[in-house]
View: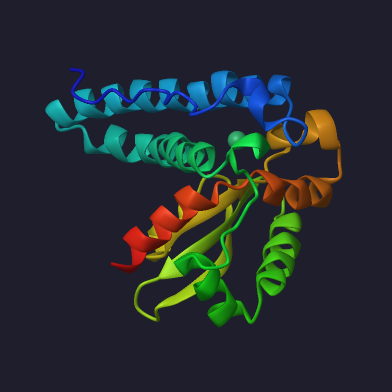
Amino acid sequence: MNQTTYQLPDLPYAYGDLEPILTAEMMEIHHDKHHRAYVTKLNETLEKYHEAEVKKDAETMVKLQSAIKFNGGGHISHSIYWEILAPQNKGGGEVDKNSSIYKAIEKDFGSFENLQEEFNSKSAVVQGSGWGWLGYNRKSKHLIVHTCSNHNLLSAIEIIPIFCVDVWEHAYYLKYKNNRLSFIKGFWGILNWKEIENKYKKATT
Ligand code: MN3
């Protein structure tokens, strides 16, 4: 049984293109080793899950769920992460002050700097491994900053992802060592605001 096979997505840039914020070595290990491992494990687990399903083996199906959540969440989060980054010589870090997302940030946070401060301080203190997110709450029609442990998904609490930062040590340690905050501050310099605007428009329509 092999109905579901997920693939490691190609990056929309080369491993070295996000330098100096993220080095080619960091990007290669992160994408080709870490993300690939989540995809491989997700596919392996889903195959076992489908086998158990055919056998009506609910006990095994339940046991496999945490691996699906972890590896599936890792695959989904990383796929979003690669999309919302861009090389600095291709507009990375440049936010258009006339964009819908910029205006929404000013409305919901008071200023762009307020968002940066809240996002940075919350993401920096995630205990252990996790992610910092900017998301859109469709019910209240507001942007919010939220952090998730491990690979728990923002969409699990009905918040639509707009952009995210991976604050697992594997995302920054090779260059930034224990200084997670300095990595997060640098991350703003490689944000792909065109893609972020697309995600915001999709979330709000
Ligand atoms: Mn990661």
